[in-house]
Image (cartoon, rainbow, N blue to C red; front, side, top):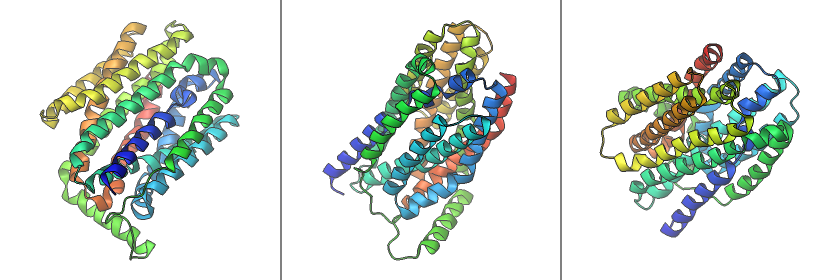
Length: 362
């Protein structure tokens, strides 16, 4: 891949993120479920179901990306996201909503680690691995800004109702699908050429396992990062349902979620200015920030809850981007998507346990 095509590839990934994650219904799904009459316990159970599905398919999806190609896997992810949106529109109760969220989880699995692997190996072909830190920071920032802008429309989503809100999500999902076809596959040693598919799958799994057994540092980084990320994610999820209960006007919910999302965007961007700091210092900062957000969620004061959410999301993404860069530098290209999926797999395991627990205590 030429340097010109590499730049085009990176721009396409940026555009795909910007368009694909503008989902006003998905960004405020907890509030929409609460509006439909689902209890916080049921919402917590649905979140657990999402992560159970994610747990089952996270590693296989990474292997699929490494064996069959990252471009095809990202296209499949967009298609599955569209199916999830259509199922949510026609959902009538707990079971059908769970099915829709299961498809959403599968879509997430297919994209998780795949986008990062495609970007890193595209840059690696021209010896531009150094640019990945900027890509990771910018891509996360674009995701957070887009997602936060979508949450700004939470009031609109609640006014429209879940069916029309998800129809808008489908519209942007179709555009993102079209953009994904502009991506180019990267020919690396991770792309099967001479071996049968079955043999290639076994080989990728074996080599990934050997890496995890050998690299204790990578295992520990994945575990700690997943735990902090899970707590931050759940605090923000349940703030969607808790803020209106404090007396906050529903019209202010979107702006409140937008402000908290901006914290994440700022955190992901600020990582680039602290690259000389040791990972342990970044980890300590992230832990303190997320713990602060958790404690503020119990104050019952909207201003403090939103401020806590801002600090928590800033700290989480500040740590997340640094972790992503560190892990990609450690992981070989051949198993990149698979091993990055392991990172998400650990996150899902923790979320399964914590989702219902948070639904009970919050």
